[in-house]
Image 1 (cartoon, rainbow, N blue to C red):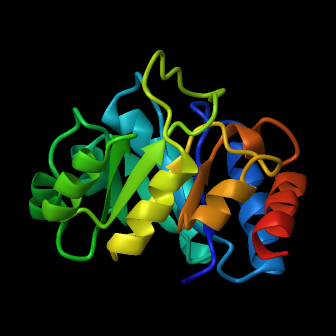
Image 2 (spheres, helix red, strand yellow):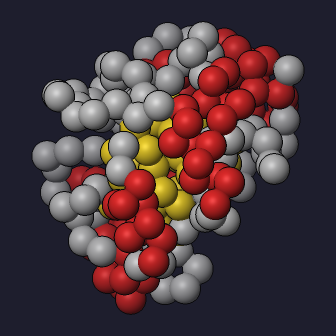
Length: 212
């Protein structure tokens, strides 16, 4: 089994000082462990593609410099426009097959599967490169309402039976991530735990738990 890795998700505001914060976070990850941070998801809402592309450009360059995959949230069209490394799809955002046709063989395609084994198996059969389960904990960035909350056992079940990597998401912090790591999460998707405070200290705290 490979070591769990970090999958950073952007805050909704990625302008201003954010590119510098991303650079600091990725540099901290690289300094601690070469493969600690392996993906970054560009997640913005309510802006047009032109503005999204403008905001994405410096972030994409920073990710490329650190050999971190740049994944676009929700939009196959934006991922194609940006020539992103991949796209992350919610259940309403199109199918992995559509994304593969638009983005090509090399694209990394992930699918949100909530707490559902069935949705995860369907995503795998449709060609997803990873499945995301969550929210495991109350999330500061996404209101999941009354959606069922998965247990770490779901990660253990998936990683035992399937080769496709699994991502744990939702309210994950250095303090509560231990059970998810031990259950076999390939990636921890984190946002507020990093961007809600000192990003370097947060990366260091995650590394301590994830790598010992």
